[in-house]
Length: 111
Length: 115
Image (spheres, rainbow over the protein chains, first blue to last red):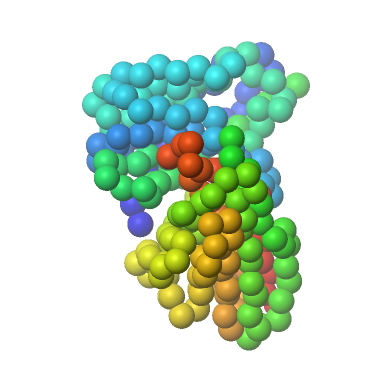
């Protein structure tokens, strides 16, 4: 099935550093979502974006809906050990209730 | 966010047997539930969309006779893996949209191992 291009695939950072990851698509999306998945758990919704250019924050997390509607990024500031996990972007096209997921970015934070 | 539960969290079964996985919305009515499969170190792949009171819509390549979905009430959808084989071993996750949000909230997942 269709998938989004998510990068980087993995990141190894020191506690306190900022992190940035992004997703691109060949299709235009009406909604961009960012989820975090811990091992053996289901994904948890972090941020939802609905308008091109929208910039939304959730604590230390900030995400933006790209102007072209074909991309989105997620920033995590001042990372902490509990930020460890896999982050997935997901997009939804207009008129569809289905989500298309990126392949995920595995984040490792060294204390 | 909306709370979705799954049962069981882990199940081991023998090849050829059937396994039923339940997905429940705990604090809202879910007219639509989604079933995903996730293989190790891979992303979530949508298997089917389950609508209360009607037949599920399966994604291309997903065998509807093998993965039986029933959504008989507004709070419960079930996925039955029939005649399971080792290649069906995977992490199965359901999600649902709540009445107050169009976004999908996921259950904790079910780890299926077929021996």
